[in-house]
Length: 263
Image (cartoon, rainbow, N blue to C red; front, side, top):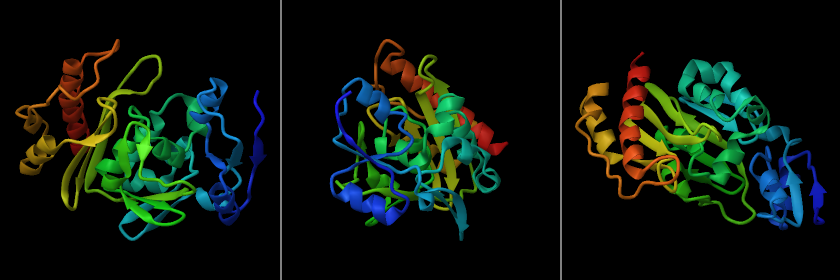
């Protein structure tokens, strides 16, 4: 193993200082540690955020739920506030990876990593969430820039994500059997500003689908999905599924999500 320094700060201020000095933030480590083992990442300074209590927990502020960046998937899944106000988010967290991954992986780590098949980015995008960092607040529509790319700047840490509480919402995920990532996942949220539909796993990054949103704004019902055309040209095509198959899955999963949101 190559040499690197390891710091485990106990406060957000200390963690921010270490990261600003060139340290690489370590959240749950579900992606980073595997990448380090494969020499895909070779950080010289690791900053373990696991002791920073300020970054964990869920609280309600007005019409929003604020989830700390270091809140683990299993804690989002089991949190009483999340289950009461955004049950779709709790269900999404409960379907990530396996029990070991959910016990270590974090909301902030997933959002910052922005894997194109990760589940959380679809919830962040569909719910119109805001990403809070050590320096600013970033709207979901401005945060995700493409495969593993975000608006985060060097030395900037995610501290929390605030989710507006929707009228209703649901997440439907078609899993890739081996990895349990989304081959196609669709998060549908009926918000105060109208329906929002975010798709993950189908392309090089999470994206909203304007056609589906328009159809659901006209009538929030599963049958509204049928008449929407899904362009397959920009979707992934690999050994798991063709782009055309993924296009069809987007419609199927959207219909499922709407049906579940309606109860």
